[in-house]
Length: 435
Ligand code: NAP
Image 1 (cartoon, rainbow, N blue to C red):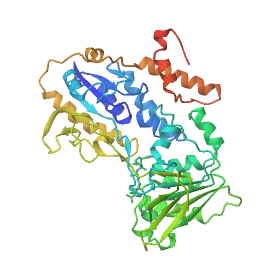
Image 2: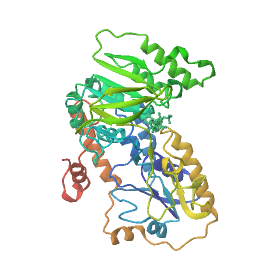
Image 3: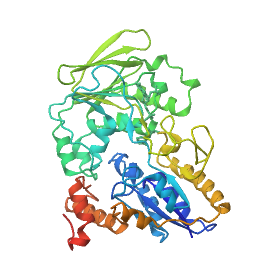
Image 4: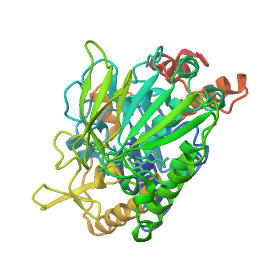
């Protein structure tokens, strides 16, 4: 039996685990490591809580755990608690599937002011990530979101949506309470190029534009001047959706979405906290100032290096999933999948094809690799003082979340507190059930 470690139990790691477990060419045992006691990564902590259909992918991904060959090893931080090189002594192959954790910065004056943050922080918070800082939305009337990708659309929608509509989701109760208290009136969604070049996809855009009780206006671009004939389908649909939204007034609208295109932020202004953002037109250099109590940059993510593992331009260098040195030379036994392999782009489903490529490379290599004398991973963990959490521990968390949700007539309410999560992980030893 060959042994494979996967670092990261998010969508790409789980797709890879499922594919490795269901093939019959080579018998493999798979250990899935994650620093959290919960699997699903960005599906759990990145996909918006009101996107049920995408969340349903969890069922497909969880099928990997039906295999007795797959073991979930939570609460293990590879890179700090245990090094990748130590895993390589215990496994025939190690697959890095740990995503792209950091957000990019704008690099403009005022970015560190109170009230300026990354969309990622906001997403983590409303998704109930245990590391997220609580967000205080009291008194916030004007928000600016820089970037026009799907993450920007997600955070704008969560700010502008009627909180009553969000109360059916799995958002933690503390998040719902904060969102119910907001007095948000204006969200400025700002792209540095025109509407035809926006990164967001049309389904997500239409969902935002169609929110109830909200009107939409367009600044910095005019849809009439865009020649839609030469555009691809997504760009054309986006321009058409914007044209339709701005042509339909919403009498008595309490919330306003301002689409500002062809502008880049040059400064975030304020004395002790954010008060306004200054933008410069990329067409004629003119400047405008937009009032803001909250500024979220949503301009993409990038990966972090793992000690001892090659890293370049925010990714692990690889050829068809096989990790290489930065100069392109071979590095046998290590593989990459997902955002850390290809960069932070693509919907959840893109990871399936991506995993197929990496798993194909891995199996082809294993078929010809000589059997090595491997160390015992359980002994390695014990020697480092690590007690991984298990699938049974996750199922206890899962049950507790479903129980919390059912009490309120919902499918699930996320547990966002480390203390509560760990109480559930260790409940078995304590003879306890739920916090
Ligand atoms: P993204 O799609 O790459 O969009 C990044 C945006 O930031 C672009 O509009 C980009 O503009 C802009 N940008 C980059 N640098 C900038 C700068 N210095 N100043 C101003 N704007 C700047 O990234 P994302 O929104 O983080 O999404 C990541 C991936 O996750 C995407 O593939 C996305 O589709 C996916 N996702 C999907 C969903 C969903 O399906 N509902 C939800 C969330 C995320 P330029 O184009 O001009 O560079």
